[in-house]
Length: 352
Image (cartoon, rainbow, N blue to C red; front, side):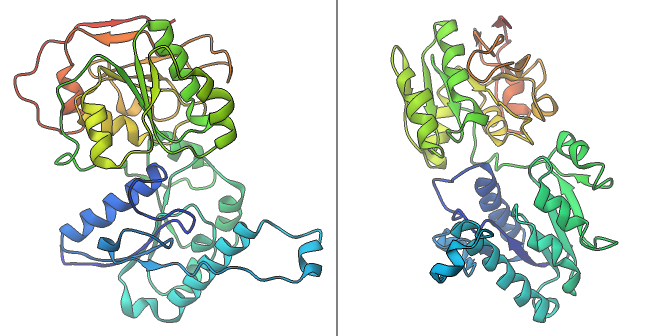
C-alpha cells in the first residue's frame, strides 16, 4: 500500500501524552505512532500539551470571553463546552478550505459531533471510529443530512450493535496495542485494577472483590472524579488495598506483568476495554464483569467473567475471588504476545 496522508482528529479536552487521561487517549497515541512506523504521514490534531514526538497541531482551544449579559442568558452552556465546540469548528472549517490538497483521509478519533456534522463540507473521505455507546449529540449529527457521508467503524461488535439502528453498516475494527511493548511479565501475588477513577469503571467493586478473596489489590489510574474517589474509593484503601497513582505506560506494564490477575469491573457496557488487552499481553489473566465487549476478548483460557453487579454500591456478584496456580498461556497469546514454555493453567475461581 502506498503511503497515505492522514489527518487524525483527537480529543480537544485531554492531551495525547503520558500518563494518559484514559483509554481513548492511549489508543490515539498508539495509532499515530503505528501509522507513522508503517510509512504513512500522520498529522495529529489534538489538545495542547500533546506528546512533542507526535508533532501534533494543537486544536485551537481559545478562552471564550463573553459579556455578563451573555453569561446570564438562559441558554448559556458551560465554558468548556463552548471552547471545545469552537476548537472543532475551527478545525473543520480549515479542512473544508483546502483539506483535499493536504490529506488523503480524515480519521475522526474524537467523541465530538462536529467532525461528523460537517463532514459533507470536506472534499476528502472522513472515517469516524465509534468509541462509546450512542450519544444524543453524535446521533443528531448523523441525521443532520439526508445521507451521512461518513464511513463508520466501531471498536467492538457490542458497540456496533448499539449503534446499529443509526449506523447499520459500521465496520468492527477492534482497538490494538503494541505487543512489542506490552510483554509478558513474571507474575506476582497481588491482584491489579487499572483505569479511570470514575463510578462507571467500578474500582470500589474491585476492592470489594479482592477483599472477599483475601488477596491484596493494587489500583492505578487518573482520579477523573475527585468526589467519587474521596467518598467511595479512598476510605477503602487499607488492609492490603493500595492506590499506586497515575502511571505512564512503562510503569503500568510493570504493574500488570507482576500481578496474579487483573480485575475489570465496569458499571456500564464497556465499549472495548483497552485494559483487558494490556493485561492479557502482559500474560496476566483477567477476571471481570460480563458487560459490553469483554466477552469478545476473554475466553475461558485467558479469563473469567462473572454476572455484572446489580447495584453500584452493593453488587450481588463479583469477579473474584480469582487466581491461578500458574499463569495461563492463553493470556499472552490472546493479544499475539510471545510466550515461551507455557505452563498448564489451573484456574481456581468462584463466581459469587
